[in-house]
Image 1: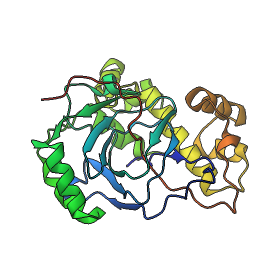
Image 2: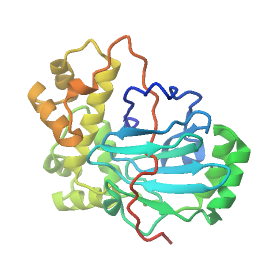
Image 3: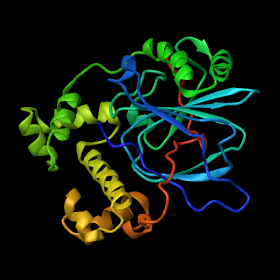
Image 4: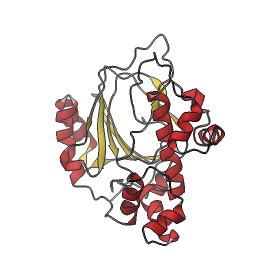
Length: 285
């Protein structure tokens, strides 16, 4: 399992309240092989704000719910930071999928959704108006999950292939292997490995490894605020402080110090990409 996506919350303006009442849980057993976690931010908890979302290899399904409408968006993997808005008075339900587990909700590949999103018209054969009514009637995360789970079970997912073998191999070892060494360890050609990653997460195994290491570094900076940046860099596999800083600048546009959280600061609430500038592609099968 990859680390949860890191969501950075800047200081809230004085006219807003901190996000509270956020509910999060691991995936139910029926979806555990495909989904990492589910998240519900009820309308009373949402705020009008732009949130910074950091690169990762996961896909998110987001439902924006209100009494008037339900909108659904499938957000692709990220290779750069983006800023996305949320609106006060709307509820946001999120399904955070494992890397490589993009559901067949649209007629598009992960590569076509990198740094983009598509707005959906239905999920599992149910119109969004009907789904929105059922979700709001359910009221809280667990019963809402029970509404959505059977619909997601109807959706095709990628079959197991070389990507899954590679991911298991990478997760079982702390060191980062170069694509050529990873291919050799799996008795695959480098071209086969590159193609498997492109088909399942939308980019190369080298990019995947960079993003995974960035996520680990971000988590370490926040979980261990007294560690020096050089120590964090060494622990997560960067050559040195300068290497880590270059990677942060290239992937996020900022330095590691910008993400440092003081030991006395509260842990930020995780949130997901909300509908912003959505790049539309053809709705799927």
